[in-house]
Length: 375
Image 1 (tube, rainbow, N blue to C red):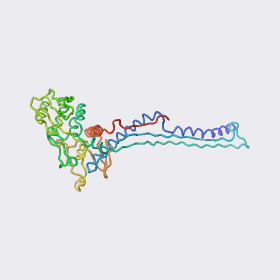
Image 2 (spheres, rainbow, N blue to C red):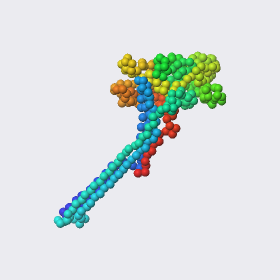
Image 3 (tube, rainbow, N blue to C red):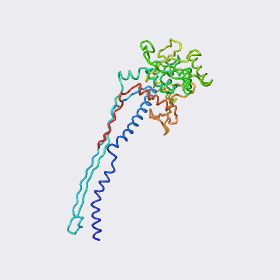
Image 4 (cartoon, rainbow, N blue to C red):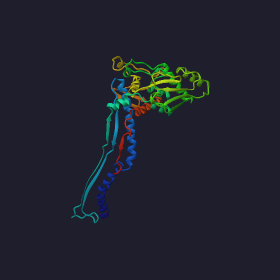
């Protein structure tokens, strides 16, 4: 009986000490394990933030507000981990307690953990904003994307002001002109080029400009080459492209020239849009409540696709959004989103994000992320 009493007393002395060990094990993992976990977490957060910023800027322009571009310059992950404890034991549990000996124990401890990241943002303004956002896109950027087999219809619909004399959608917010839908011939031409691209019936060739001082405004030279058709349907589409671009029936190539008017046979002219104009055009295709249009809050909705009747990027709006949204953002009492089940819109929005990143070129080195791993 005495042995059992001593064992119980000993266990009471060790219980608080064991509690400290258990509390220490409840802390989140520290040290090198932070690196992979936080790298992925910050990467996803930055990506989601850029998507939401892009959609927000499109909505801002839809309702006549200016877009805002914020550059994430630096992210510093900061952790603090402190622990401490003290205890005392009075008496002698090892020899057993007697009636004259006063036994006692006490313990105190503290464990603190804090996670306080520091994020530095820099708004884009002044000459940087004017150069990178307001100036038309470089044709070389368009040519580079064409060489990567980017869908030509989506690319041209987003980035071109006109091609072969056919106009893209014109939004009054960017052009000073009345709102105009895209030309049917513009839509038809880029659709045909996309079908020929799918059929491997055209090839894009980009070569350095040997006379940059006088040809194509100094940009590289780009050609659309007609490959030998393998069926009559493809041949008919090639001939329709020749007709729309005023080529001869036997011409095997088109040169894309960055001019207002083509000056040579075999050339078709095109003009690019600025990043601001691209966002304004996309914003003009977003359907909004008819009440907002009647009250003059925003202009009527336009279409950038006269053939299919749906925008290149379909943005939904409402007070109740789908949980399966690719990207969503609340704005003016409603929620706007792109459906995760609408692959063409997701592809076009992703392409727009890539173009935005290349055009705005926020930072040559990107955001700096510092994660401590020496705990």
